[in-house]
Length: 399
Image (tube, rainbow, N blue to C red):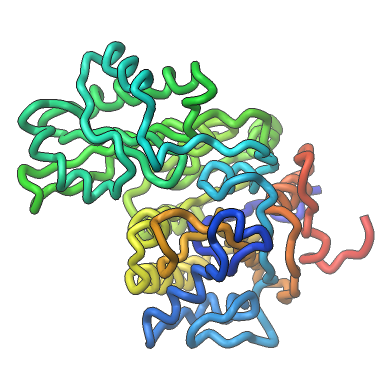
């Protein structure tokens, strides 16, 4: 029998809570996203998360541990190779990624790939470097407007991003180009980046160039079935808010909602909480990562976490006695660390139900414990990895 009718899983994208044991392999020793961003803002305040037990997981400025946490709390270890968005989310839903997706940070993409892309799209490309999306638009945006050549770049992630001005290149054309890029990179295993991302922008000068909310991700399909597929097959609702639908390439999703910001994502989640459904509401809040982590804006990151705390306080009253809320992350992105890459960190896990006391969940051996818990709750096949903590939260002994 289903224990909870609705589970809300909110991924606070990149909010890590301390370097994993293998962080040195990733050049991420001494990272701790949440701790370091919190001390960047002297008056940092997250009262709702504090009551839920976030201060019991790691050192957080102005957020002491609590003896009577409203939520069960702990942290989770990533066992997959890498520290990117796809890997983290896929592991949450039961996939163990053993080979990292290729990245092209140092030298850009191979000439053969660019040649093939230009041949198949009938467009020229400029850039082909690792760069901040906002900075490369400022640098190459005017050249793009003058010549029509599309701006192609990457980052520390396994991504190929293509930027174009919406007044110069229609959105549908940019999407068509990205679809071709996705197909080309899937045909060659050496080029199989995790995501192709369309990055439209507007404006006429470097001072006015602004990226729009019409971003679209083209992800690699999960290479095996996930808990989402099991839920959908069993006729449960799987509601995707934010970029969840893109991350799983639509697999296992029954309804998808695009969002423009963290605030918009939480507003959509609030709306769904006031509706009846049976199954999972899976939310990604990407601004933490995209707007602040990669840009190494610790103060802005701190304000974004405070904003999330505000919306979390608004959400809790709409959760029913038979609802379960889980909050976690998918990797770290310490804004005080060197470079602009994600960081190899433990991630927090908070599990809330208004009728249940909070307990210490300890250090979970894999992100997939989340997927295993969801699967056990809805009595669908469990993933090959992961151990459910449902009975721990419910204080039930035995199997």
